[in-house]
Length: 447
Image 1 (cartoon, rainbow, N blue to C red):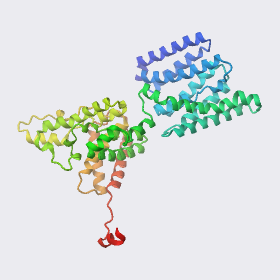
Image 2: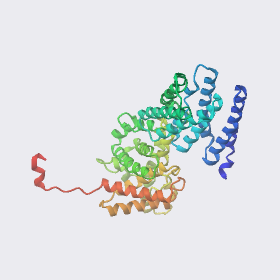
Image 3: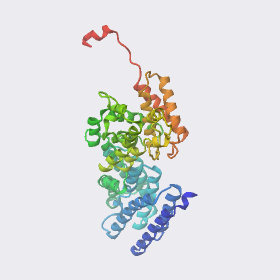
């Protein structure tokens, strides 16, 4: 019942409905629309936990459908079947990656357009089935070709729906209904492709297309810098993305977001790469000449500096979350223990050796945090046997859980178990024992 008390969201929903009611009154269309909008808004607030920001985004998308229906309604020369209703749930699916929300948007957009255009229930059902098909077709899409194929599916579904309601066909029906309904799907696909980047920017969302662009290490300046200035960190990030991505796929989290978050999580090490062990291949450990308190500051600062670099480069807030939260409030154990050993007055406080946080807020960030700790622990093993790897994975994951680092994300115990199993499987594949070939065989055929 706490969600019901989200006053700001309810006020926002009421405000939108009031505006829509005024518009409906002036435009002379059904006053049932504000009531429908209110019910939908309360559904989002109470059952979907939507905040005022999400309500504004959803409201803007639905307003576009209402505006298109109003504009075409005023011009009788244009068929109402040209209204690109299916583009609204397609955009919702691509932007928010929530099938239930896209399904709800399919009904709302179809109902709004049918009511404003003054068409019957058959038109509503035709639009609704086409919209649901569109939302389903673009789920997990990573190529623009998939959007065009979704548009073709919309065309076929809508034409089939019309023929089921109106079996008889003549030239007039073809021109007034079948032709517009068929072209409608391609209009929807074109509108989505043309406006998706704009809505990403306006809503602050990340689609698969933007994530793929961010993962392109050949063209992304930050990743190129990481490869040249901190090659050890760059390699660690690539390995981490494979480990974390497999775990995300195992629990049906956003695999692509997890992989990209892993690529960027340590970009703060660009400031002082030589102070991190993975980049100290040809040099001495610089921390040997520093006090533990100074080493602590260097290690802690890579999170703050990473956030600053990301903000300067204009990275999306969802990627910045990985940088800021991938250590949570964990203790820097090595330097904390070193401080305990060297401080004769025994006044070392554990809290001063903790990262500032916040703790991971999403499943994807939590997976990267766990994968980061597991990868570092297994890398230091002398023996990479399956038993040893499984023990390390179990110990690291349990320690993070006991330390409360997973308290603020919505991972279940079952999902944590699956994540650990995935880590063990991928790490065993990475460190598998290779067959030792006889010396003579190496010389055969020049190999």
